[in-house]
Length: 456
Image (spheres, rainbow, N blue to C red):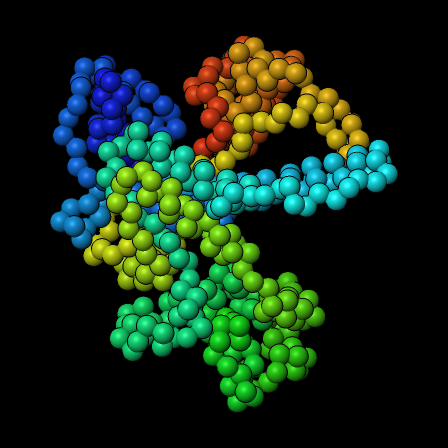
């Protein structure tokens, strides 16, 4: 993974390799400016030549992929850094629902009647729910942050996850597009997301999946995506012309596979019937925020290129690249080759900056405990990245991670190996102040000769 470099005046230069960064530090030409992502600041240089860099963005409901790339000859991309940004939109929605329930209980207990209020809560144009606005704001915050660390000159965004018009009417764009290289990618990607990349009938995930009609064509079933699902070859062959209920009731092979995968026939049938009617909640969140994200990206003044999810998957499968959110971001748009993509991915998890609420409540909304009024203890705050060197005792050793403070001065540190509790503040040193995010470096899994291999 490349290391970001700033000049003496904190202006971004071209990222360098880890080896070059190590030499700059050893020879005293640079200092560590930030640990996550690792950024160096040169002591004796102002300005320098830079090359155009492109930032690919693959928006998601739970995780957004980011990929920083260098372009050469216009058609070749060289991956420098990969990021996966984990959102906390569902936690925000849950917290707002809980707060509304507590408020409702207080008002009903203390106020017998309250006049209806419905027309004095107007929303501005383009308003998004807080859980959705969080996704837009978080992605934009990291675009701004990365622009301060690298000379980014262009942006790529996966604007539409699925081409819904093409799903409903394949002929809408004419015979040339329908029979082009992207034929079938939109529908298959939609089904993979909807059915969780597993056989809808037996739940098997370790087998190739085939597109299957729930209501067979011979029984009047259509080709609409609402009548399509994914199944393994055995289930697809055994189901044949049977209805869904008859297949689950009569197939002995299906029952054997269900038992092997830890499922029951009744529960699995109920899941299939519910999933057929259930829209994609995650896809809805992406569709609700995609234009808002596109507009704020355009406001940066950088050229923004957009593409569909079908194009992204086509690029990824054409080049034999495994599926991750970060690598999807690198595959957005039109290009020929993607080089150096086997780099570790920095996972960035939105943690928030704490809460103003200083009272712990029970599930019924009554006080059950109180927090200390200050957030800092002995110069440390929850969320800071610290390094603790414990000389003796059961927890002797070096522990690096995100700290959770206590008023007593005995802290918890969340390391990559797990939580370490009861570390005194005397052994801790701040390596980066909390910025509302947690960081974790994960290897990239890629395929070599049909086998998976981890690149550290």
